[in-house]
Amino acid sequence: MTEQEHDISWALKLLEREGSYKENIVAKYSSHALFGAIGLCAPIVANLIYRRPIWAGIHLHVLMGAGGIGVGELLQRRENYVLAKRDAILRDYITRHPEDFPPPKRETYNDVFLEWVPIR
Image (cartoon, rainbow, N blue to C red; front, side, top):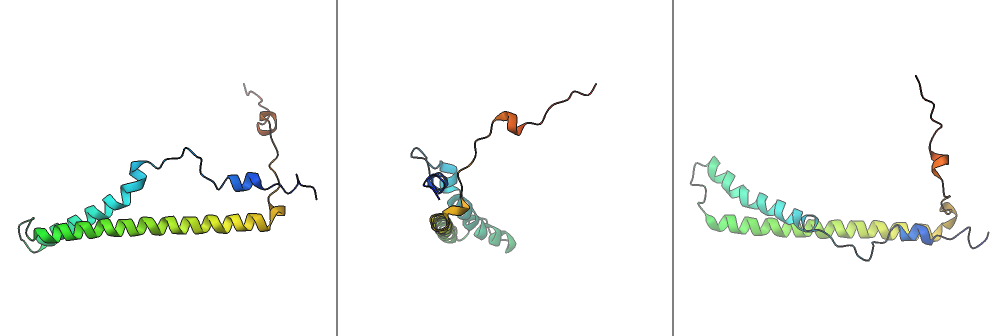
């Protein structure tokens, strides 16, 4: 078993983010906005069901909207935790079992494409 045969740096590099990666604003705040809107709309729906003015109990709108934003933040953190844990498990498996990750073989287009025969 040579050093080149068990070089797993290419597999570990697949799990890393690029240095220039920047999360866009939609991905960063979409859960906050969604759950904040749900929290804001819940008292409105309740007011419509009970036939009250839409903005009656404005304090509930503010509290439920803020609570929804908090729930969105918690879910975002939970997602980041689960994904980081998954990546840690994958990194550990790759380092413990390098024989399962041979270096990929380079293929040319000639190997990938089938021979083309025109049908006339």
